[in-house]
Length: 302
Image 1 (cartoon, rainbow, N blue to C red):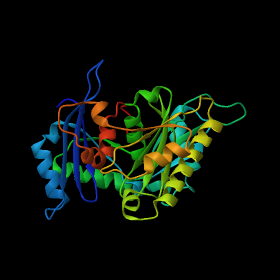
Image 2: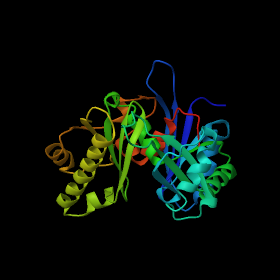
Image 3: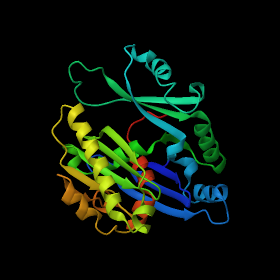
Image 4: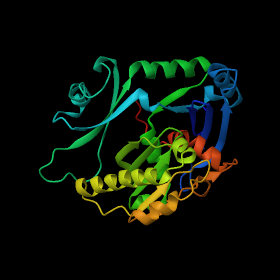
């Protein structure tokens, strides 16, 4: 088996392949990054060629579900023994998802931090469509890819945030895809909160009325910070990191700095990892989620 964890990301416009290797006492090493448009060949042919080129049959590989293939739910933790937890969660969330619970594959993880007195313990449940899990696994297998882990964007973003020195005290990470945005709050490699927003790169770079969109972004970040402050016994978060984008959004950083009581920084992955390959800003953005997935260290999977 080849060293490291290889991320295989399926975008609407193409394929991202990245490989992260880890050595004790050193930052993660990026040893492979590639983006291939689907073109006229179709997904199957592009996947097969990448699998052959990068020996993905002998690699531990991970991929990331699309946002419409799962639900991430915050729920009260059932008071049951650990071996009964998933079964109890299954019935607790059955009315909170838009597909039948029998068609769901579940994973759960605890919220970190000290539980406030008088409040029930809460936890996150990931409910993914089993058909989506199987479809992704079959697609990878048919292409000759050794799929070991299936992840979700929120956990991938948590992994990215953990690279930042500010993660020791807690950090808000704000990222954008073409169609939307994701806010996560994490601290010491644990995720406390995630929030999706319906403002993406396309809107930020193509529409003229950016002021109203900047206002909405600030509002969603502030709501997230207020929730964190009121629900967790932790020191306030003082850093907002902006994930890499393919091109600058004029005025965004300045607006965030002026309207949030937080230190706003731009994330550059080349300064946080050992990059043995050229990681241009546009590649950082295009492959951001799968880069985060390839930084995974836990062994648990859906």
